[in-house]
Length: 323
Image (cartoon, rainbow, N blue to C red; front, side):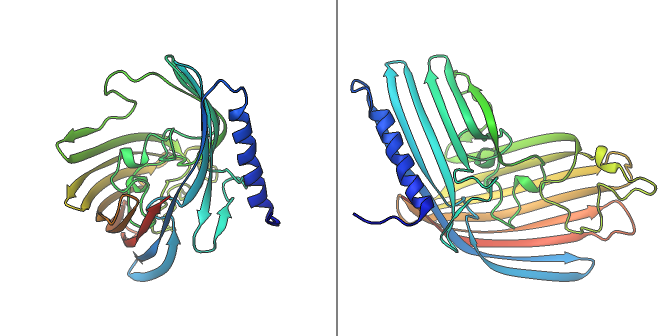
């Protein structure tokens, strides 16, 4: 028997064993526990141009196409029309091999839930993703509104033109009604093999843009003469994002464009117009593995003569394998 000195691994295995024991108790119910995961590692290059001065970065990035992660999940059939289960999910940093505990310092910071599913729908309790995020099962955005999901690191996606907390929250309760035909909380139109994505958002009084201004000196939140409490007013604006995915043999071509207009809630003369264009592809190597690459351009135009426009070009490429 091996001596497990790593406390995180030891606790995870103990937790897995407890889950198996709990679902296996009773003898008359069918239960199962599974381990799933996704590994994504690639290169990322970006160039930011502010007031004629360019800065570039080249980095090895883990989880830019899809966050590298592993999860434990289990379910138990309580009756022919009722099922209970759980999901525990943790991030993994492939560049260092460490379990990512940066989300509130929790081992299962990405998701930790129990659920009950029946004819009435589904009730979920625990640490769950907000609807505006692309996280896991309860996030309604992400790949449902943009072909680039939450953005491949510096390749612009819908997060560049929309705002919100794209993250999970503690102590959440989520109820999902039964499905009525093909209708769901989000809308998606499919014309043959081509998928069309579209999303819009109106926001008022938000405290920060999800993807901040390229020119940090513009400072939409508090650059108003004579005001020091502007954080109470925030930013008002509108964000739009559309895109398509087009399968071509082993390739899945992805195209996306977005637009955002936002202004200081206390001073409309301080505003920003942002436009994004992104293109990329995924190339299937097997049922579990694919390559990806993309490039995107973002332009910020400010409504003041003393603030110059700014641009960013982002390029990402990598490999994803599932297990």
